[in-house]
Length: 116
Image (cartoon, rainbow, N blue to C red; front, side):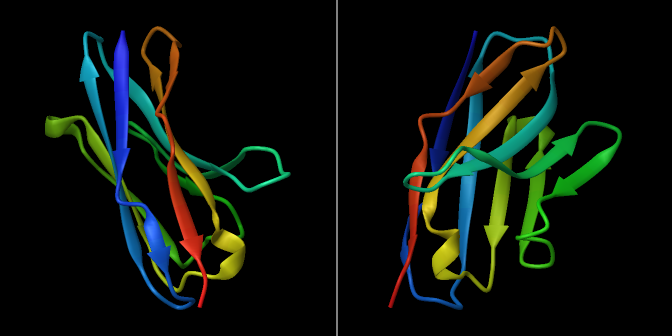
């Protein structure tokens, strides 16, 4: 069982920055894919960025060049640095973990609001 806890959301003006964190705890073998997803009101949840262990990173076109995903494997924590934020980035952001046994876990979500 894996518990994921996100932090770092909030209200920011357009052009501003936020850093989200996701800390994993519990009993698990390893996390192969660490990711961030988001869901805006009235829309489906969408992929934002992922890190695949030993392979690399992947980003949605809408955030390429503005967002950076990184991880601290020793702490089982991953991050999403969000720069040049736009109002359309407003959403609930969820972290997701895919373990070596192909079990998927989600965090509870953190609200990001970009508004002047």
